[in-house]
Image (cartoon, rainbow, N blue to C red; front, side):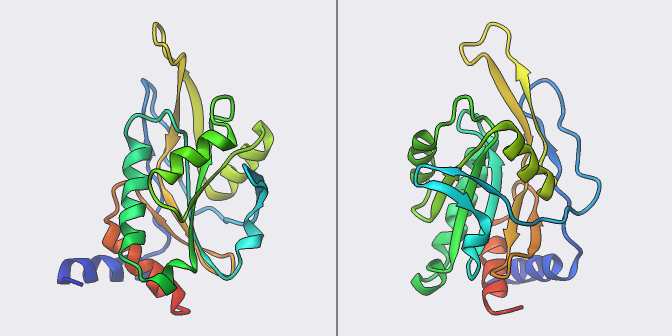
Length: 198
């Protein structure tokens, strides 16, 4: 690991949780999170049935809220996560999972989510849920999203959403919030740090 990467990791580890910044994808801006969220368990749905975060105790979970029709922010974030996962060895990978929560359940079926996340990395899974379930999960992590009508577009609407990635430790505690664009090297080193019991 080079000096710059080491400095960034230390900065992440010794700074209080980083706050997610809104990443607008439509004409309106997503408000920034103003305080560190509590995190915590939630249940949604995958193609394999109910997804319960508590069932992933013992693993590091990288959580991201987005949607499959997202033109750039989501693909970039998942690509960075995939690169971070590719930095890990086999034993480390066995203890890590990426969870993509779709905030567009009207279009993103569990089957479509499987196809989408599989493109990025086999350790990713896609989940979604009803309006209240998604709102409850998002509120726990300070994630924000809302629909924006796209006049004259075949898509009909976009979903503006915050673009942070949340690292949840094996004990279920929210440990880090990575802003959009965080280096994959920083993410992989943070995963290792948590896997080592820190």
